[in-house]
Length: 582
Image (cartoon, rainbow, N blue to C red; front, side, top):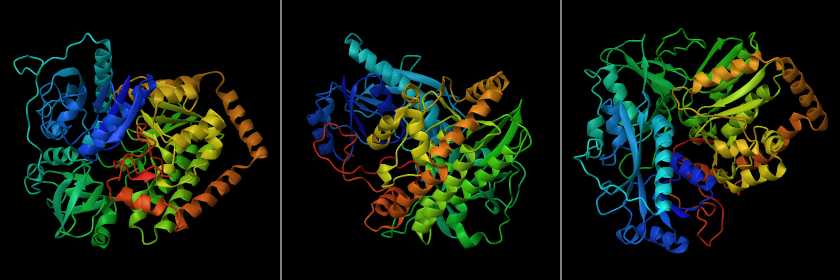
C-alpha cells in the first residue's frame, strides 16, 4: 500500500513505524505536520491509500480525514483521550497501560478503534517507556490495523464506554501546576512520579537559587539526606536534592527563558548550575555497587560465569568528552579482569547516539569541544577494537545512531533487542563521522551497502540489520527479560569449545587488516575531514548543531523522507529527542 506518515516530529516512534512498514514493502512517505496546508499538499502529492499519524500534537484537517482513511496512534488504552496520557498514567502509578490506533474524526482521540495493544507499565521515566513498551505496543497495533485495513473486510469498533474492555477516560492536559514539587512535604515516591512523568518533555518547573529551571529525570537515592529541597551532592553531571523523607538525583536542567529573551536548552545539571555548586560535595558511585543499592549511576560493572557486564546509561544517549573518558576507564578495568567476554550496553533502552551536541554548544569554544569529544569517542572505540584477550559483545537494549552505533560495531558481535531502531549515518548533522566507521562498517556489510546506509539517512530495523550483516543477532524479547536472554547467550558462547579459536582468529584478522592499512590511518583520515567539519565556517555543522540543540522547527520535511516532494536539497534536522551525534 501507499502510506503517508504525518507526524509532528520524526521522533523515535515515527522512525520505528516508518522502518517497520518499509520492511513489509509498503510504499511509505513522510510529511511533517508543519501546518494544515503542508499536510494537504503532502496528501495531494502522494495520494495515499492510508494516512497514519504515529505522533501528532495537532488535529488532522477535516477535509483530509473526511476524504482519506486516517489512523492516529494514541499512547493510551481504549477510551483514553487527551494529550497527556502517559504523564497521568505515570503520576497515577498505573500498572497496565496500552496503545490504541483509531480513526481520525471531528473529536480528538474519539474515533473508531482499529487496533489496540496492552503492556505492563515499567517503573521508569516517560521517555524510556515511550521508546520501549509504548513503541512495541504501537507497532503491534499499527501493523494489525494496517492488515485489517488491507483486508477490506474489517469494520472498526466505535468507542463505547459501556464495554468492559474500554477502560480509559478523557483527561485534561497535564499542566505545570499539576507537576509542582513541594520539597517540604512531598515524599520521594511523589517527587519521582512527577519527575519521571515529565521526562523528556516538558520537564518540571522549579526554582534553584532564585532561578527557574525545568528539571528532567529522577532517580532514587537511598543513603544521602539533607534539608528538603537542598542540593546535597553532585555526581557525573547530576545533582542530588533532598526530599521530605530521602533524596532524588536529577541529571538534567534547562533554565526557563526570560520573556522575550533567547531560547535555552537542556544541559547536565551541574553544567547548568556551574559555579553555584562550589560547596556541594562530589560523591562518586562505586563501579561495582552492592546488590540492592538505589542511586544514580551512569556506569556500572558486574561479573557472572566468566562474563563481565559493563552497563551504561547516559541521558538521551549523548556521550560527552567526560562520559567517554569515564566509560573508557571502566572498559579498561573490565579488560583487566579475569573474564572471557565483555558485554557492554545500555541497561534498558537507549544505547548511544554519539558526541554530546548540547554540551558542545554550551562550551566556550564549540569547535574545540567537538574535537575533544570525537577523540574521546575514538579512544573508546579503539580500545574495544584492539581487545584480543576477551571476546566483546555490544548488547543493544535500545536505539543507536551515528557515532553511538559505530561504537557498537567495534565489538566482535552486535546483539539487538527486537524493536531497536538503528541510524547508521552522520550527514544530517553535516558530519563525515569517525569512530573508525570507515573500517568497521564496510567490513560488516560491504562497501556498496555501507554507502547506501550512510547516504540514505533512513532508520533501519533490527530485522533488516540482521539480514544485511550489520548486526549478528536479534533477541526477540520485551525489555523485562532482555538481560536474562543476553546473559544466557553470553554464557553459552563463553562455554563453547571454539572460544579459544575465536580469540585466535580475531587476533589474526586484526594483524592482517593492520598490515593492509593500520587502524591509525583510518582514524587520521576520518579526523582530517571532521576537523574541517568543526572549524570551516562554510561547513553546515555549526548551524545544524545550533538548530538541533535549540529545537528549531525545520522549514520543510527533509527530502529523503518526503518521497512525494519534487524538491531536492540537503537533509534537515530530524529527531529533537536526543542531543548527540558523531
